[in-house]
Each structure stands twice: as structure tokens, then as C-alpha cells.
Image (cartoon, rainbow, N blue to C red; front, side):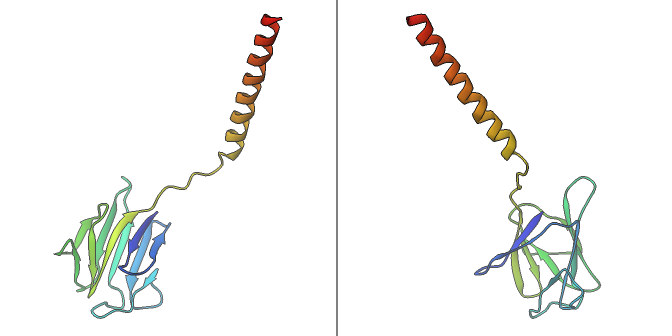
Length: 125
């Protein structure tokens, strides 16, 4: 999952492997801003897990102020779609399914504590 952060607004996050950006409603991210084409850019995830930005058609896309046709994105890169500049960030991973394990671990630790207390009382008396 990755996010684009627009200054002064909430981050736009995506979980898929491909995101298209542009004015057209068929895009994954509809960005109606000056200089943005109907189908402006595409971001996809390669087999190595890296995210690559591709300019579509004759659209102008820049990464950290340098116009590119294709570029691997890195954490914090400033990406320009027309006149809009956003920051690329990998989203924080979501940890799922550990509530049961955590509960079992706390129960086990509690049982160990009770066993130790019982042993101490038995050895004292």
C-alpha cells in the first residue's frame, strides 16, 4: 500500500498493484488540476516490490523537480502531476490477526506468575 500526500489535505491511499492518475473518471485517482491530462500517469508495483511511476502519452510528470518518463519512487519523493505536487509515502503496515496470540501470551504469563507465587508460598511454609 502507498499514499500520496497533498499539502493541506488528507493522504490518498491505495492498496492495489496499479494506480492510474488523471482527469478522466475511469482513473483510480481522479485529479482535476491544471496541467493534468485525462490519462496522465500510472504507478505500478513490480515483482521486486518497488513502485514505478510512468508518464502516459505526452503528459509531463516530474519526480523531485526532474521531468521523467519513468521513475522508481522512493519514500518522500515529490511527484508533480501538472501543477499539483504530492509526496509519495509507503503506508504503514497493518498488523492483523494477532489479538488471539496476544491474549494467549498474557494468559500464559499470568499463569506463570501464579505458579511462581504458589511455589514461593510453598517453600516458605
